[in-house]
Image 1 (cartoon, rainbow, N blue to C red):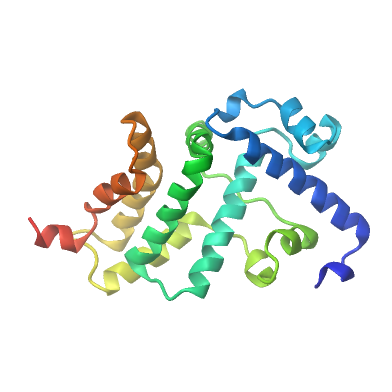
Image 2: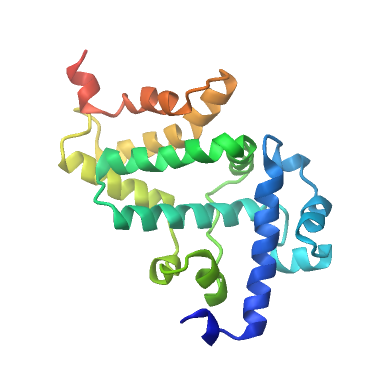
Length: 216
């Protein structure tokens, strides 16, 4: 479905929601998401607070929305490039690093938010208009709900098939470790004031990789 076939009202709603989302990302920078006020977001997007809460039940829902969009774009990229196993994981981590260069507070806020939850949040459903505006040319993948655990499971099974995992580490165990690396290595890099976040990720990935075992 192209933009012209989507009802104008639905397009306007989607554009307003995305304006709030994009304003949030622009404002976060090095700040904690806790410090960011809904008033600030609304002023930036030129939208009322009443409208904000029509789209997001609470401010933190913007973080979950970010996860949905970010994971979907990674799936799109990996569908277009023949990357498997650890190469696919390094691609994803590289995108975390890129995001951190302009919005270092975003991942830290996400980690803080997730630490307060008892389970990984469900990804929000997107309207046809949102999918069209967010993922032009990739609507089919954009409509599919992404799942970080499933993505990690797929990549670690590929890594196991390709002999990339250290002996004694199953694909299932690697998935658990990868979740720890994805969030924990970022936090470690921040605490140590590292200027080479990808290097921090690579150091942690050595725990999983067969190449590290061969080099011991």
